[in-house]
Amino acid sequence: MNKKLDINKDRLIVKSNTANLITIRKFINNKAKLCGFSSNEAEDIVLAVDEACTNIIEHSYHSKPNFDIEISVSFSKSNFVITIIDYGETFKPGSFKEPNLELYRKQRRVGGLGVYLMKTLMDDVKYSSINNKYNQVLLTKKLTH
Amino acid sequence: MTEFNTSTKEIGDVNVVYLNGFLDAHTAPVLEDTFSSLVEQNKFKLVVNLKDLTYISSAGLGVFMAFIEKMRENNGDIKLTSMNEKVFNIFDLLGFPLLYEIFDNEEDAVGKFSGDK
Image (tube, rainbow over all chains, first blue to last red; front, side):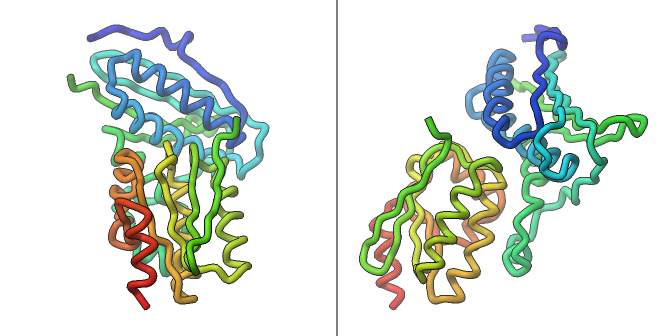
């Protein structure tokens, strides 16, 4: 299994509205299965992308619903790579350490769990700001079978 | 078709909340409203039945985190029941089984409240 996907045909652009999360999930689920991932693996990838996009909507675009999120997927050498681009504020995701749930509960903190899920479910997660023009998240999952 | 909805049922002084569909950042406010409304009615003993919940993201998990303390401060709790394997795995990844009682079936979860008395 070493097919290549044409990135141009595998791009989804949606507005930064949480109502679009379901569209994003369907798109990713579809592409992951086309690349050969099992339903279970595809669902893990879907959740990681949902978390990344939810963070972008909340932290990069401050929950304003009319800005673009561009999602593209590529597959080569057994690596399924999802690239998510936004043009909002650059934010640094919190630490990737395992969250201390007891502390979360005491402080009544409700955010911050998503980054840990992303890191746990994917093989690699990279955040970068490109030339101060846009933000990019790269999520990578290896196909191991 | 709605992505997510909740319904509730009273069994004695316990309220069972049934979740149906996809719980994400978009639908989490629906669950917040359900929990808030129960709190307003001084109903703090909740069993949440997740049998028909097909998807949960951290935004959904956050709702449980936001309300658990409130329920426990008022001699109540949020007990979870009947979740599918996929949903359980997400709860498990984040360490929820340490903080929440999770049951295989609704009857046991409801019964635990009377057993607590």
